[in-house]
Image (cartoon, rainbow, N blue to C red; front, side, top):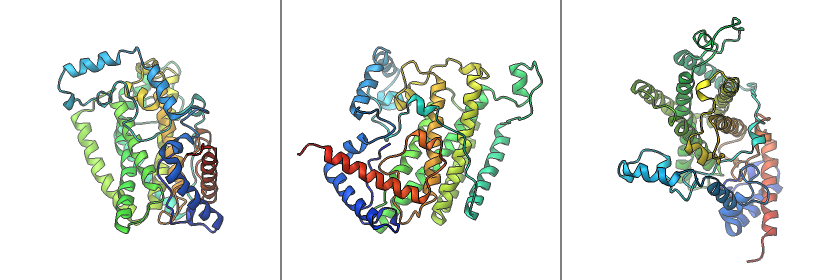
Amino acid sequence: MIRTSLIKTASPALKLTTPRLASSSLRSTSVLSITLGCHVSRQLSTSSIRPNESIFTSKQIHSESTKGRGKQELHQASLKEGSPLTQHDAVSTVPVMVRGDWVLFHPVYSSEELKAVEVLHRNPKTIGDKFAAGLVKFSRTIFDFVSGYKHNVNPPTPGMTLEELRKAGYLLSEKQWLERILFLESIAGVPGMVAATLRHLTSLRLMRRDSGWIHTCLEEAENERMHLMTFMTLRQPSVFFRLMILGAQGVFYNLFFLSYLISPKICHRFVGYLEEEAVVTYTRCIADLEAGKIPEWTNLPAPEISIDYWRLNPDAKLLDVLYAVRSDETTHRFVNHSLANLNPATDVNPFALREPDMHVKGTKIEFKRSESEDYVQKSHELMQQRTNELPPQ
């Protein structure tokens, strides 16, 4: 996945001991900013664009695939209900003929990538790692208790009905799954925005480049918010639930804000471990749905907003949405664990220009610092190669 942010030209890539990487960063970034621009950057994507297919072709294909579904009629009907300036439906704010341009850049997964995700865990190594992992474990324990989530590992009694399995804590009901997902996604969108805000203000205050971290953090925050918007179409939370989210968000935002000022590395590690738990949660949800243990969601059509966001097929089901969301969480797991291995004050974000596809992110827990350096070097080589292939202006 190619990012449109540029690597800081004044700093050597990752500020490591190899001068070849520094010179490559300077040459490649100059070429990118002057010659290629945003369009070429996105054409270098390894996960969101098919081979020999431009981003515009992908959008055109998606537009064609959604024709005939009555979008114009639905849009006009919604306008009759009230002023278009007061519509609260996220989809209704999007022009009917132009879809997907209202969000930041995000991956669109192939069917092979969706199935490539593995449940992984990074063993804590440093004191900071152990602190972050312990905090996530403590937070999950509290949340599991509050939400009534039980993953009973003991085998159930043979012949138990679906309702009995749910009462015994072996399975979550459709309502419990939605409440759990809504709460998690309302909190998960906080860290990326906090990190982006603080790095943005630091860049303004010190009057220097950010080395590509801001865009990645913003994209993560919006991605989590889109998860929330998607599942909100299935259930509107009660007033009590909203108040609980309000309190939790207020506490978590301020704690994470102060923590990021003290140690960004530990904060990114914390998010990495948090996303590990999210991958586990969605993996279990997918397994239950495929096993027929959530009959309310069997063959349930995917919300329109999710079809637009992930470029799903018009006849996509909620199961397809869960696979896409799990892949997103896997990306956050990989990216945050990798960023936690870098120096946030001096190192370049290796994912500022592109990200590996899910065959890497889904089977590998992180990039070590040396791997990030090699990845940046490869990104620059791909940029230079694409530049050489462009016709003269």
